[in-house]
Image 1 (spheres, rainbow, N blue to C red):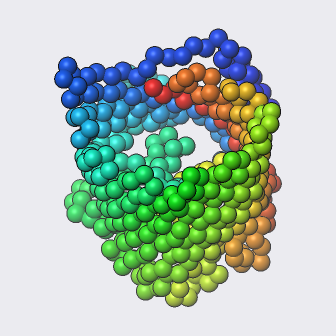
Image 2: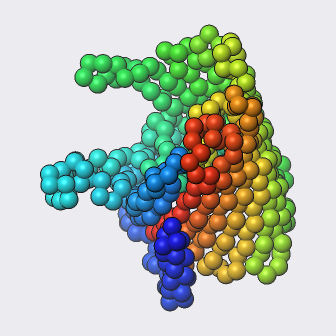
Length: 425
């Protein structure tokens, strides 16, 4: 472990020193017709990442390390200011994973399946007066703070939806209506149906009454046909940023039916912080999140909050113990109390320390609710116009409730480290 930590720190220091010699890259490639009606843009991203973790199981001798990457190429074709087509393809893989499918197992010349190659986004965008928009096709959807619907950028593959989105946008307010097909039951594999219809509908409205104040209201409907599930998630969101003060408050209720059971759950979150106008621009934040849990999964009421298609990586610790809520908390919900300190010693160096203390909202069968404490140290180095390097180290100390959920206490702490380069232009 000491070697891994040393590698991360030394690599970060070397990159920081190299940044003094860096120069700006040229602008993205753009082609334009002589009459100016047609434009063509190319955007590229390459993002390799080395990771080390203890397998998130609190068992001994299960450490692993690997390198993954994301390689994306986007092509945007525009006609005047009325329409555009976006095609974005990506390759996502672990380095060396192709060797598992070939003989001999160390020569990728025999593998040409391109299993990690996919269409990430592909959509048509129609515009009217720069206020009305209609987007059709495979697309990312990221709303407000990503608590319910997010694109999960940390994940190399990211998240997209096969969706249609209608938008009206004015200076201080806007409204979106979205529909996504999550699962199609008419599709069969070798003559066997792979699932049932699953649909998602979203109504989202925003209002910005004054500078620095953003408010919104969201209503999400999701349904799964074969389980007779029909569920609504509704709630407000408010973000305030005035001078150095910033805060975010949001709350959502869930209700409906899941099979023969009633669904009734809720969550609430508050975060406040302040950035001091001084050397290194220190920022301090504190927050509290509450997601309801179910103390009796055998009755006819479901009371655990489901975070739907959220980007939970940015909220519940960078080690990703709680990506899937309610699954990763055993249906008991979660409370997160924490704080963050951030400093900017240089325009090419941003340091951040996050501390989380996690509890279940309902006790485990052993009467415990302490999931544990996580500490995340992140260093970001934007040292070129189009290149950023991020490195981080995290430690999780498990509590009694985590022992109940994981079923092991072989080791009390687990570690996670990474270094990632992001080249995008």
